[in-house]
Length: 110
Image (cartoon, rainbow, N blue to C red; front, side, top):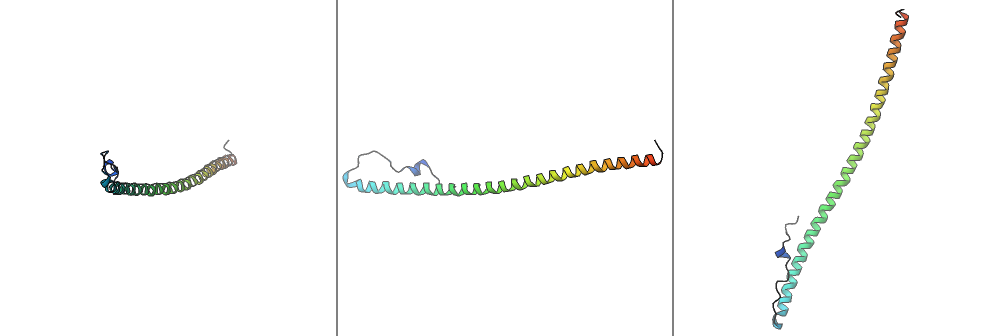
């Protein structure tokens, strides 16, 4: 967050309901305006900081989504390769068994 922390005290722009003499009204209005401007600046700084943080989080989310998509694609490719190897293993095992059976028959070992 911004180094300009929002506090109730800093956001307070009007500090009383006392009766203000006409001659001091301008000065009081000026004081109120200055306090209001300071409060607005604090709010703007905090809002801008929050916007930056949200944008950074959105960028991170996009990066994470891209990483997850790549991981899903890699996992899918890995699964296909694993299925291919399992099928090859099964076919090879069946071929070896047939060859063993053929050799056994040729040797006359029923």
